[in-house]
Each structure stands twice: as C-alpha cells, then as structure tokens.
Length: 415
Ligand code: URA
Image (cartoon, rainbow, N blue to C red; front, side):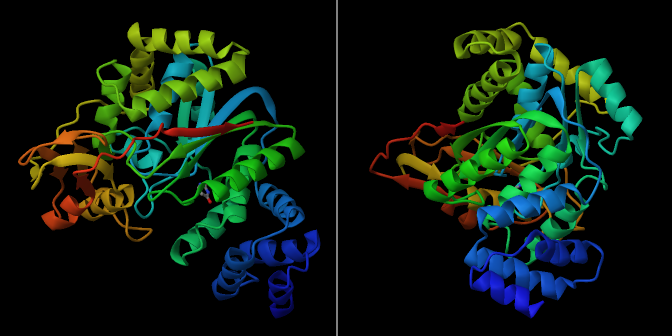
C-alpha cells in the first residue's frame, strides 16, 4: 500500500493492475477507509496521469452492471451547484419534442442540491425497479430515478468517502466519477455542465477547461459524443434554493412565467441536446424549444411525469422571514456558496449523510445580480424551522456603489 502511495507521489505511473488492487480492493473491503483516504488525498495533491485516469474509469465501470450503448440515448450531468434544477426543466422540454430521455440522479450533500431530493419533496417515487423504469420511459418519454446500487458501486463508495474527507474537488476524480456513471448507463451522447465559481467544485477556468477536455477524451475512448458547457456558479442558478421551493421555480419557467439566468441556461441546454440528438441546426433547435414552452407542451409533459411517478404539485410553503436591504447600491453578486450553506442550515440539505431533509425549507431570492437596490427592499424570503442569523444572510448580498459588469452565464462550450 505505502509503496503504491509513494509511486503516486513520485508521479511514477501506476499500472492498471496496481490501481485495480487499490480500488477494487476498497470495494471488497480489503483496503480500509483510512488507507483509501490516504490514496485520495495523494491524488488530490499530486494528480493522476491520463493513462491512470483511463484505467480507473474502466475499473469503476466494471465494478457493476454495464448497460449496452444505446445510439438513441442522450444524457446530461452537472458537476453540481446551488439552485441547479436544470434537469427538471430540460428533460420535459426534450421529452415533449420526442427525445426520449432516462436519467439517474443523485441526492444533495453539503451545500449543493440533488435532483432526487427535489422530486421526493413532491412525492415523486425515484427508487424504481428496472420494470418501472422502462415503463415510465415508454409511457411518458422521460424518467428520472435514483442511481441503482449496482451501477458503478465503486463510485458510490469512493464518492461517499470523498465527501467526508475533503477530497471532492480533485479534477481527475471528478472526471472518473462522472464519466464512469455516464458510460455504464449506456448514453451515446452526453451533455456535461461544468460549473465554475464560488458554489462549484471547480473555482477557476483553467481547471474547468482541463476537466472538460479530460471528460471529452474519456468519452472518445468509449466512442461517446461529449459536449461540455462551462457555466458560471458564483451566483445561485435561478431564484429558488431548496427542494419543493425549487419545484415552484421549475413550474414558473415551464409555464413561461419567468425569465432569468436559469431560463436562459435551460433553453440553451435543451437546444444543444436537441441538435445533438436530432441533428437540427442551433436556430431550428432553439425555435422548437421556445415553442415547447410557449405552447404549454413542456409543462404538460412535466405534470405527466410527476403524476406517473406518483407525485403531486400541491406545494404549500410555511410562513417566511424577510431579509431587507440595509443600504442602497448595485447588487453585484449573490454568493452562491453562502446561500447554499444557509439553505442547508435552514434544513433543505444534509450536513451528514443520513440527516433528514425539511422539504419545504429554503430561500427565495427576490433580487438578481445587476439590480439597483434601495434601502428596505426585500432581498430574500427564508423558509424553515431552523433559526438563522439574519446578518449571515445579508452578508451573501454584495451591494456596492460601483456597478460590476455581469458576465454571460455560459462561459464556453467545448466539443
Ligand atoms: N458529480 C459526480 O457525479 N461526481 C463528482 O465527483 C462530482 C460531481
């Protein structure tokens, strides 16, 4: 063990067999949590070569069931952020346009949200059997389920350890984790949203580009088309952060009642996936996406999906507390990491793996970056049983006399 860790430190490439000995050994409980923590920390510090990354992707994929590559199957994945409910908006748009889409999603941990918790908050059943999974896909044209225990079990075990050992933000480990799951689940075309900024695992453009290119290279090895969007995550995505609270924003956007950074990103994502899937030009794809929203078909598809998987859309939020502006100025930024942490502390997320979530807890932001703020304006509404220090919330709003230029949320697209 120590010999292999020394090799990693010296950047002396580990063979497939050596990596298998470590990681398969961990899955089989022959390598302890303490030993694997040392391995992960060494990887975080010293990185991995491309060959080592490719070997580990293969070892992760082969740790469980592998679905055959399906040429019609398109998938999406985000590296995780605050207020990211894109899956719940993009999938119904695509399904309403005849693109069948099946997705396995994860739960929230730390200050980033999880699609599964958002769905469970409105009673949607996500622990589907194989038969239920395919019936939903056939009947509705879309399905979202939690990741099964036998798809990349090695990622499940390693990710849980990364989460509690401060080793989540290693670029090679993120690439291995995401790509092994996407390849094992059979998608032939994959859209990846690589988030950059305060509320993301990657906080700079250089690392984000490296991560995107690495995932594209892994995709090529398995003959999968991978497109990466690099998107900003200094500010929360959209205005609602929580679980059922986020579903309310999904409904607003699908009903064409709300235009914000989330609406823009979801339309761009859906158009890109539609062109990847059907070969349409970007303009043609965008026109179809706009139509699906304005003619109500995307919203109808969302309702059909929710009801088919046993959910309901009656969301009643409890009383809230208001956060008011103490000064005038321009709102230059809403710190997404702080907002994510406050939402988690309100009860919307888990501090520990097995914590219970308060599904109606969270935050609704009433202002957007770039807004002109007056003293006394409502900045946010807070929901949840846990008490939060109002000053901590106020601190997340960067209000200044100097106006900062707001960047496009989509920084780059890499193919
Ligand atoms: N999402 C994943 O599935 N894995 C990571 O390591 C990071 C984000």
